[in-house]
Each structure stands twice: as C-alpha cells, then as structure tokens.
Amino acid sequence: MSGQDSTLLLPRVRGDWVRLRTLTVLRWIAVTGQITAIFVAILVFRLDLSLGLILVAVGASVAANLVAILVYPRNTRLSENELLGMLLFDAAQLSALLALAGGLNNPFALLLLVPVTISATALRPRSTVLLGAAAILMISLVAVWHIPLRTTEGTVLQMPPLFVWGFWVAIVIGVMFLAVYARRVTAEVHAMSDALAATQMALAREQKLTDLGGVVAAAAHELGTPLATIKLASSELVDELENRPELAADASLIREQADRCRDILRSMGQTGKDDLHLRIAPLGQVARDAAEPHARRGRVIAYDIGPGEGGAEVEPTIHRRPEISHGLRNRTQNAVDFATQQVQIKMRWTDMEISIAITDDGPGFPPQILGRIGDPFVRHPDTARPGYDGMGLGLFIAKTLLERSGAVLEFSNINVPSGNSGARVTVTWPIQKLAADRAPLGQNQKLEV
Image (cartoon, rainbow, N blue to C red):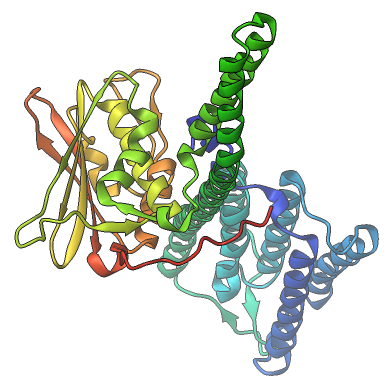
C-alpha cells in the first residue's frame, strides 16, 4: 500500500460518530438518577434543599431532551460543534445542581468527569481541551459559590477546608488525566481498526490478483493448442506461397501475430498460478516471484538457498498463498527502498521449521522505534531519505498477513560490509504450516468466469 493510500486510513476522531439518540438515552438516565438522589436526600437524609431551583435545573435537562427528540430524527449523527454544545450544556447543568446542593461537599461532583471523558473519546483534541477548561472553571466557581447543605434541623453538612481543597485538586487532575487517557486509548483502538481494515483490503486485492492470474493462465493454456495450429498452418502456407510474395507476406504476418499472441499470454500468465500443479512451488521460487517486481530498481537482490542444520538436501515445496506473497513482497520492497547496494534473501529449512531472512545494507531500523515495529501508523521521518515518512501501515499489513499464515517475525539490525547497521527481518514458520506434499494433485479445476 502506498504512502498516499495509507493517508486515507489515518485514524480520525469525529463528532459524527455519535448518534443523538445515544446522548438522549444517557441524559434520561442522568435525569432519573438526579431525581432519585434529590428525593432520597429529602425523604431519607432529611436535607433542606432549594427544591424549586433544583427542579428547574433538572427540568432544563428534560426540556433539552424533548426538543432533541421532537426536532431531530432518531438516528441523527451529531457534528463536532453540536456534540460539544450538548456536552457543555450537561456540564453546566450538573454544575448548577452542585451549586444549589453543597458545591464540592456534594459527592456527586465527581460526575463532572463524565462529559470530559465522552469528549475525549468522540471529539478532536481542541474541543476536548475547551470542554476540559470549561469544566475546571465550573468546578472552581462551584467550590467558591454554592448553597451549603443543611438538614431540616439546621445542621450544616460541610467538610473541612483541607478536604474541599483536596477534592477540587482531585477533580481537576481527574479531568486532565481521564481526557488524555481516554483520548490515547480511543486513538489506539481506531488506529488498529483502520489498520485491520487495510489488511483485509490488501488480502482481498492479493486474492483478486491471484484469481485473475489463474484465469489468464487457464486462457493461455487453452489457447496454446489453437495458436500452435495457426502457427503451423501459416508456416506451411509461407513455404507453399514462395512464388506469390503478396500472399506469402500475409501468411507470414499471421504467423508473427500468432507468436505475438503467445508471448502476450505468456507474459500475462506469469502471475497466473491457479493450475493445481502451480499452487505449490519450491521455496526459492515463491520468494523469487514475490521479489520479482523490485528486481529492476537499481539494487542487487541476492538469494542464498540451502538447508539448515539437520535439514534435508532437497528444497522443500510450499503452498502459494496470497498472504505469504504479499508479506514477502512488502518486506522486499522496504529492503530495496533503504538498501545502499544489495538486498539478501536467505532461505533455510530444517525438519522443524522454514525461515526466510531479508537483509539490506542500508541504515537499519531507527533504534527508538525498533521495539514498536509492526504497530500501525508509526511515524518516523527517515533522515537518510528526505521526504520518506514511514507510516508503519504497510509493515503492519505484511506482519499481520504473515502471522496469519503461521509465521513468527523478528526485526533486528546487523553490521553489514558497507559499514551501516543493516535491517533484517526474519520470518519463521513451523514446517507443517508451510510445507506441501508433492503427491499427485489430480485434474485441474474448472475456473468460473
């Protein structure tokens, strides 16, 4: 996947991810809880509350919900500003209730964290900062100006000033911490979701290319006999029409065009591997096919194929699978991108496993991101190549697809003869996950087109 394509998948946090109905349901729950708390405070704890003003504040929330339900469709998606306005209203309504019921002496002051947390998960950072600042301002005003909590006997329920100050500090820190924490977690979830979607797109594209290549290979196979017949007949006509140059030229043209058709089908069929006997291939051939698109980009691709310790001398045959082809092609592309002169693809096998190590003689992986390689959307502009902004998405896709095939990937830097700290990616499969039996496969299956 190109860098331009990957920018389309950058994780974004937008207001229109949230439905109006979701917030109205949450607000009804909040209103129910507020009314319940009010009457429990009055009837059970015998608190003397300004009931009229409190019911006005609760009624404002009820009225806002009714307007939202009656004016807007149920499945309306809120814009950035609309969602921010609703959350600011909820924070202001809760602050008004706190001001009428003891300020920070009221334990429900902690609920002011809820609008900020929702904003951090659904809005852009600028909106969350604005809401967080407004929440801190509101809680600060409530801490200073509020109606004290009193019982019906006249007893004032108030915490010591030190506890009130500590509660204010805890809420302020909670607003900032929860906003940052929720924002980071949500961004990670969205990034992973986008990256997995891109992985599915890459695998689907690779599968379509494989299927298309199979159709081309089948066409080349089926057309081979008639083209050979046309060539043979045209060659005989050329010999028989030596005395009639104008007809001999036409017969020669037919033969040349038949050869051209054969060459075109052969070149198109290079990626067509859907014949049953081509669904498996030697390990080295699969690696060469994956690297072939990058073989003429000015870097030498050297192949080192041989058994590992205790491995059989015969090169193993493996299944051609789209995820393996895509993963190896992507790793080769990155190696060629950063190599100075040469890329080495080293293949080894034993009785237990098969491994492919792709090494370049470039600057290697940046040490500061070596531990994060394979995460999606890792940004690190490469100083050796201005303008190259590695997103990590292509590497994530390749890593995910290779792991889906049963592979384990290892990323490292090694010393290479050029003096650089070359990058190496080692892909290892258990042999039972990759090796194929070369028993007779039977007849080729018909392709549905």
